[in-house]
Amino acid sequence: MKKILLFLTFTSLILSSCRKDDDNTTTTPEVSLETQNSYDDEAIQKFLKDNYFDSRGNIVAFSSTSTADDNEKPLFNYNVIKLNSGVVYISRYTPTNGKTIGATDKISILQKTTTYVATKDSKGTVSFSTPIAFRNTVTSGTGNPEYDPSYYYVKDDVLNAYNTAYNKTYTRTFYEIEGLQEGLKYFQSCEIPNSENYNLQGVIIIPSRAAFARDDAFPYLGSMKDKSFVFNFQIYKTETR
Image 1 (cartoon, helix red, strand yellow):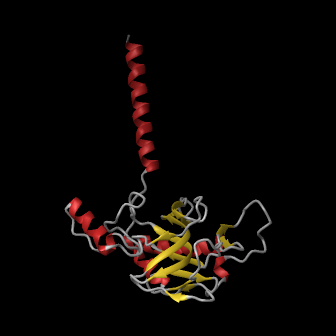
Image 2 (tube, helix red, strand yellow):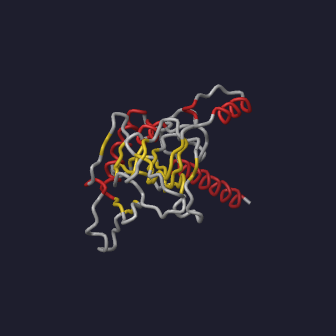
Image 3 (cartoon, one colour):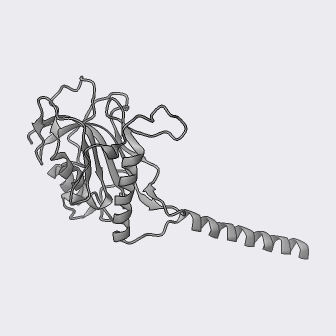
């Protein structure tokens, strides 16, 4: 009987220890905002070196096991523009019949957009985490651009309805990604029909501080805390609101 009790006690201690170890390995300590901002900037630079545009403008990661992409031009070697906010953008081309994108316009956007959190690993390397899809209308099946999304410009009735339902007083920044609004000022809409095949215009990379940082945000993908965005996109049309 004593042996059984000793065995059960020993087993309990092992399980307790394992649970503590699991907690330690799955919990990432929160860094300061200043550190997170520096992580974002460093991760963006690494992303620019590790990826390239294919012939249709899709962002593709360089292969570590094949030489087929050895002659591809990394994003870092394009005309990379960094804004004061930390937003980085690359324009592949200017549309032939392009139209200026207004700050309150309704936009039709075809995109492959992902979110990341910049972190430092045990070796001291800062990079973006495993990507999580935010929007993908390029390979979603229909291939149709998304029309008038709230993360670019939220309609008053949508914002008011949320505040009423949840007894909040959120402003537009609860929904809108400011870095996207800022970046699109440097692009033009293509003014083409939705049926036309895509040729992605480029990329806007938005560090978390130019997105939602650690502020309250609409849960597009659950928590938006510390998430950076990579918008690989084409604006098909705009419409004055």
